[in-house]
Length: 137
Image (cartoon, rainbow, N blue to C red; front, top):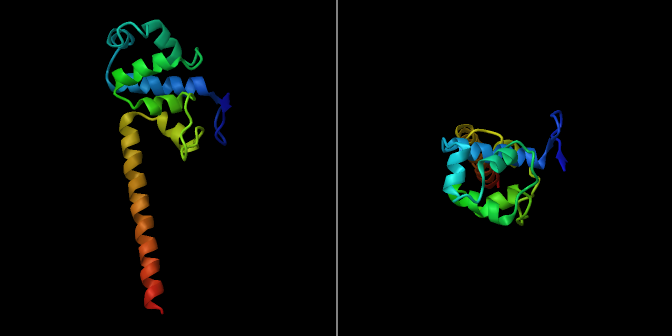
């Protein structure tokens, strides 16, 4: 399945998921071999490299479970991003989620802060509208 954001190149689900896995590994400063060791050999370094480069289809539940455990990531999140689980109220192909997963952890943190500012601004605006509405009555 190819995913296209307006004006951007096509990217397969496998490639996007591979980039996500690579970011998780790099955020820990681990090599491919480190992950292989930490999963007890469940995920070989060669297989992980192929996953990260989008050369393999989304792996089995068991592989994703092992990766979630070593990366300290919620299993549901990895399953959802891998396309094996669709959570209610969280569209599997959510545009902003896919884009955010391509960012480094540091930039994702900054993005969260910016979104928090926008949300607070919107809440304040709505509160001011309510106050203005009550005052005009």
